[in-house]
Image (cartoon, rainbow, N blue to C red; front, side):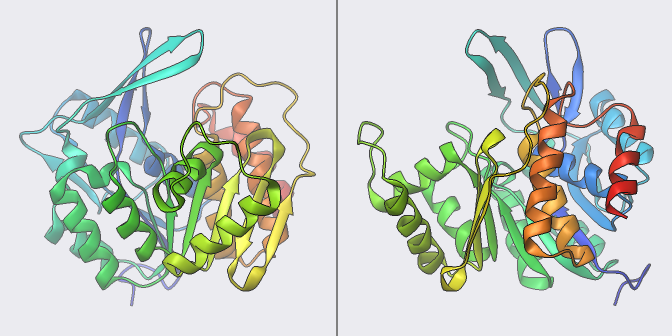
Length: 312
């Protein structure tokens, strides 16, 4: 039982880091973005991560305070630096240089397990980047073995950071996996030997391949996000929910954090018992709204007010 509340929480595991742009630094990391969204909607959550004993670590801790998030799962590393990603803007979009050997690569197991015991876990969110480090990967495995709740895998592929073995283990551990179109193609390449120069699959072939992934890894569902075109939910037993009628945002500043926003609202909807179709529609709509602001998370917390009012 929870030491603090009888309400089921979402445990969020992974990186909290600083995106280092040429002109500013922005706190990010897909798991941390998800946790902050959940906290803004006053959904119980516990973020398990590790930061350095440095200025960037203090900046991240300040975000925990700003969003009224528990720091029970926030570890401090006396040696390694807080995670940092150097973001380079170019004509073809953003290029990410992910700095190696950061604090989130060393999430300590005993501290993480102790933090997890303070909540009742209704869901467990994890990604792939924080698994590049052996210590964090082992901690995640221990947490998955000792906690309850739906396992939600948010695939976040970055070049050279995730290997096929980690991907396979993650998919086997998950109940629900979420990918974008590029990540889906990477899975097809790994598991169906579809090369980058092969012709694209027809729509029916893609659906069959997604169904095969469900069976291969024992997933309850695979969600494919399609940007402004919506999303498709492939469920066990051949259930498909194609959500394409969400109105696109009026304008797009950047798409940073759109996938994280989708994941957060999907988890929020499950926690609050929304019907699946409604959950997916709201996740699409909120992700689109994030594209209309700079960065992955709104700087003005008043941004959330209209959504809470609309979805009450």
